[in-house]
Length: 215
Image (tube, rainbow, N blue to C red):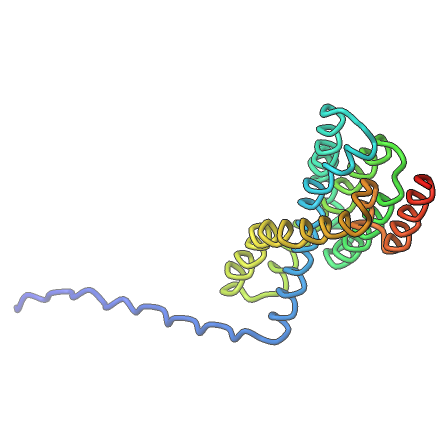
């Protein structure tokens, strides 16, 4: 009787899945989230430039200056978990919409500040209510709306917004802010132009009042 040898069966490799096509909807979603992140980091980083003029205007100490900077991150850190819970219950789209609207509201309110404590409270609320929910909501949008093979690239694009905003903010805010102060003869409180839409008229009125006081 001949020896019978059992040959191992060839293991068939699973066919590679075809990559999903990048749709117009995907591009629109990632672009919108990216611009939202730019706005988020613009609001977060611009305060570092504007705070110098704020300090001159209000005359607050370096300790109070640190409190203004810290207030934002205290609120931001404290609300990360609650923001995630709300995201699960309400969905990411309402949170994203609310975050963008809240950033605009708190930025506008900051332009009406009359005391350093008001700025501290506004920055705390901006971090806690406006900023905290955006990142987890954006991550959920990517995870639920994009195909698996496109999620990593999308997340990389969104994460790059922090670095890009870090480049853009000083290039935009510093020249505009410096030009404004020069045009208004170094009026310190014209830092408000960065927050209030009506500040060109505000600064002009302040300049005229200053000129009259010198006559």
